Image (cartoon, rainbow, N blue to C red; front, side, top):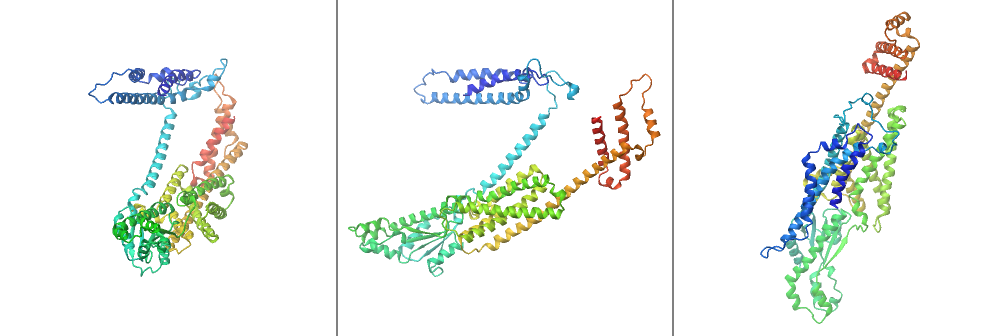
Length: 633
């Protein structure tokens, strides 16, 4: 494959340049293209290629000596083959990098398809405005500026994506080593061997990557309902507790009889967790940690009480033997289960879609406002009210659509109608915040810089919701102030259907962003109206100057030029005897130019207000109108 690419490159150098230069003498030929390549480079390409072909394609290699390792020859083959690949790739890169830009510049399909009777000729130096040097392209080539600008744009885009992705990846850097930041409640209602086994297992698993267990007395959490309430209230990420009398039930089951038949090992331990709070993290960290803890508790029980349990085991009872083999297991209480597969999108892509939705609609709205002259035909207050109404209605419908597809793919997720309405209202507020912010940015920032702002804004908000702040680096904690994080916190409270202790922080942040966005949107609207008014004023001054020119053309005396003065000017412009007479069109153009200059001076003296706004606008308009009249004549 490398040989095919290599020789196709050489053939393209030999074929495309002569064909492209045919019929277009102003562009460089193949000879001039080759002249700029160093001769050593051209000579080294075929010789190096044949040299490495000879080395790597020799099939009869001498056998290695017995004292050497038998893998030397295969290693040499692999080394030479890799070296050949590198050389060929380098040659292909050099030749194509040189060939394709010149091929695009010199290849002319119209000249190749034109008949011989109608050849395409190059423009003359007088018509093209450039000096026609033989077999050389102009030094001030405009493509250089084009390639330079393209390189700057490419570097800017690459830096934009590099910095934003580095910021996103940094939010999960060494995330597994911060598992101890998750706080888990431990309550021992048993107080005997099962409770001691659980504590011993945690001491064995304790590490920076394992969640931290906080042991509390049963008096503080007297029932399991109080533990569930603590997890739902987000006092802890999860909780685990031993059942009352778990050790006594296990001892009775080991002795056989009805106690062994009815014994359930999952009743010994129970862990409580809330899946709706960052579902991906809850599945991968919290539930996995509980599985490790339960398995370690079983091992710790065998170490602590295994020998004594074997002495009391009823070996003739199969149920008792089964209890001995599986003494301890755990049951699970998921406060808010999320069985749907779309749960991984709620804190990732769903937080980016509202920004993109507002961005594309604002681009369309600004284009339609300019097309239908919204700012020209309506007062600023009226046009501002129209845009405010459009933004409210659009974000209202957009929030409904987003809530709709979340509910459409909820599967067996147990949510209710009032939660649908609350989700709808929160998303409406978020989308209106994004609309106001992006609308202000579109008015202030230049057009090429707006996508950079949108991409950065998306990555900042996603980085704040992709994982809990407990396991992210401390620098990312400033994401508490971003609207996406506050919105996701409120949504998880709504979907949990429980108390919301952190609403006192999330709601004020959202309303602060909303007020800031409204203020920025109002200022952006005033700026648009001011720019439109200035553009309309310049157009009105141009129309007045054109009207004055028409009046002056009909009656020269009105602009301070008498008929006698006009006759004297025309007589002075008559050619002397023996000189070639000017064409009527040229004479008319010269007279028109002088009248245009006097007209511009008269307008400037009669309209001082326009001179204060822009003293050069009238003269520039007069010159432009004069040039247009010359072209028409």
